[in-house]
Length: 105
Image (tube, rainbow, N blue to C red; front, side):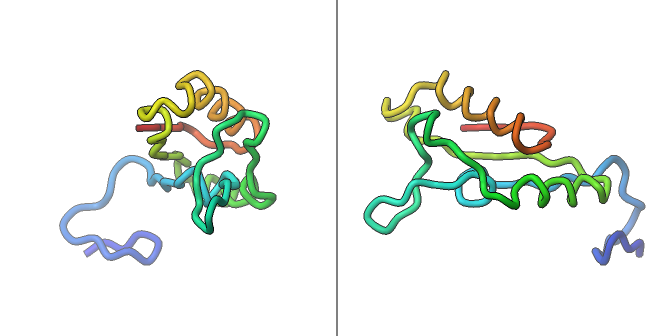
């Protein structure tokens, strides 16, 4: 058995780099609250990240992990926000927070 940062691994030593997956809305980016529920913002000018988002990701990366953002954006499929707007939000996120990749579905 091999241990890696407290995790117990059976069999072989892990290879490659660790990765931490962050949800975008409500974890790194500040969501919009409507009727008491959390939703992704729909306008680029409303897109903002939490004050501690940058430091949180920096800490993960300092441990040698890759920081990946994953997000479900149903408003694109529902025609409520354009794909280009979401891509602009992700570009803004990359400028504000040192993430390695952003994936949306």
